[in-house]
Amino acid sequence: MYGIETREELVTRSRELAARLGFERMGFLNLTVEQSITSPQLPAQVDIVTALHACNTATDDAIRFALAKEARYIVLVPCCQAEVAAVLRQKKNETFGKTALSELWRHPIQTREFGSHLTNVLRCLQLEARGYQVTVTELVGWEHSMKNELIIAKKTGKGKASARERQEAILHELNLDELRERFVY
Image (cartoon, rainbow, N blue to C red):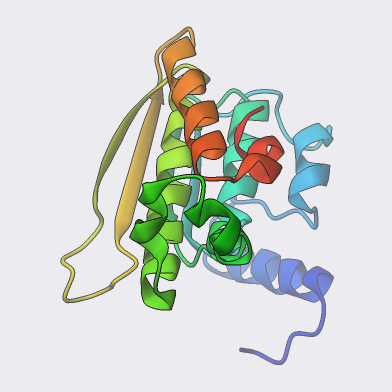
C-alpha cells in the first residue's frame, strides 16, 4: 500500500504516525503471533483481542493468542477460510461413502461456503470448550459485505466438555480428523 517492504518498516511507520497524532499509549511490536504469545514485551494476560477480516488461518492465530493470554473478551470478524474447504474437497469421494451429510458440500461453491461456515462453528465450539460464552451475529448489513460474521466471546469460567465432544464428533463425522490440532487444544 505504501511501498513498505518489511514488517519492521511498517512498525516504524506506525510508531511515527502514533507519535505525530499524540497517541502516547499506543505501541507497536515487530513480532509474529507465535513470538507474541511468549514475548516479555507483552503482559501475561490481556483484556481483549480483536481480529477484523483476518484471512484464512489468521483468525485462528488471534484465537490462539487470546487463549494463551487468557483474554477476557475476544471479538472476531473472520474473512476467507480456505483450509477446511480444501480438506473437504480433497476427501470428498471418501466422505461420500461415510456420510450423507457430504451432500452439503457436493458442488464447489457449496464446498467453499460450507467450509467457511464450518470453520466458524468449530471456532465457536473451541471457545466454548475453553470457558467462553459465545455470541454470533452480523457486523454490518449483508449489502455491505458477504464476509460479515461477528463472533463475540466473553470469558465466563470453566470450559464446556460438551462443546469439546461436539467439536470432536463434527471433525470425525465430516472426515476432518487431520484438522483436530487446529481446533482442539
